[in-house]
Image 1 (cartoon, rainbow over the protein chains, first blue to last red):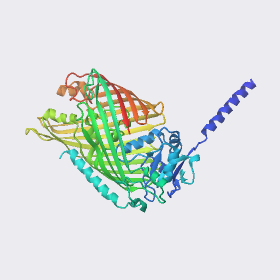
Image 2 (image 1 turned 120 degrees about the vertical axis):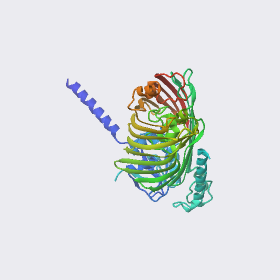
Image 3 (image 1 turned 90 degrees about the horizontal axis):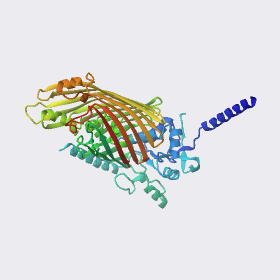
Image 4 (image 1 turned 180 degrees about the vertical axis):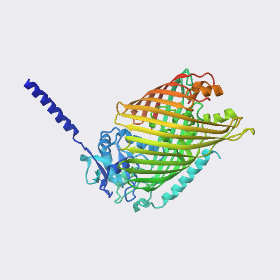
Length: 147
Length: 428
């Protein structure tokens, strides 16, 4: 009887442990900007407004150029869910609503994170996201979150 | 000049003005951007330290001009009544949509956009090219919390959740929009108008607010709308009249909850050729409430409209007609995977809410009672084969014919009918 109870307890402990491990917030991607952009922090509201293509200029008035990957790319899904707290289909709806009512434009889609790195590094006013392994001194990481 | 011509001239004038603007230095441009550039504001912004490698990568930089488009072909098969062509018997391929969309944002606060659409939909559409929108958009306020500005030209009517992009099949919840609210027989009249739009947007920790108000001349190219007058008063001209539409939307948490209220007064006037008839005017005054909840796997959407319709000096008796109608739908969407989606919808339309079973209509003008309402139960599937290809299939079980066109249903009609649709759509 006791061994049975022990087994159950071990089983529960295992699941709790596994659950905790899964619940760890995994921030595999970071928001990056062109190194000439002055902004060092964006609030949750600002990052959403930028990636839904409704906030089009930096505080100094210069153009924001947004880079994304394909809707189904793992990094895009990760970025949408963890940083924007939105589902990828919602982002697509925002962009389509802007483009097909003429009231805005879509972000620029790139093919890979390596391409994302090069575009953000070389485009004034650019914003995108990268995994830790692609981040170097050619781009700058921007903190996201409310102060 | 025809309406289309006028618009084309406006667009042309805009583009010339834009070109001129673009030859002047933009406020925040680095001086390097004045170097030999490409054409028409598409020039990439070059930065300092030019090198061969740099200029190569600069050449691929995003442009401020974007071109998008779509094409869609549907197969519709119905029993009892025709919808978008001779859809009974063997079904119909008469529902075709194609559109091309261009936009150019030479300055961060200035954009010009245009969408040209070719559409076939049986006898309910003139099957020609039309400019669905084409305008100049200037925002005089743009910061982290606000966006405000003005649009001039042929502007889209802010109406409910789906009207703004109803052209584009990928943005609709189904092949056919819920007809009770977005009746396709009047799609041009509903979609856009010629005039001005004022817009404002406020973002806050409690959600985002969007306000749009249009003051426009309505579009009157819809054959069924014109037929309403010509069938009683002979030939004549249907022309747009000054009208307004306004919508306030509230979005919580990046669009997880969307709530909206739309109000409008849309007017048109029919000038009959025959001297014995007076000029007749139509006024449509809806108030529309919209709600949507978006979860990761599912969305729940509902809209309700109270629609008042008044027609003055109509027909040989120059009668004033008026009725208050109601329409609503409830729709549930489930995303099985990122590219498979299914939906269920119940959609109801009562042009006269004091005559929900159509009996008064039947007694007054001898039409079948089921012309006085339509109830549509729909189930459908969407498969996004790739980001640019979509297949859809849906089945409607319908009672009543209030949103079918009399142009397509001249003989016997049916109270209970089915509509089965398949569509293939492309986008770029």
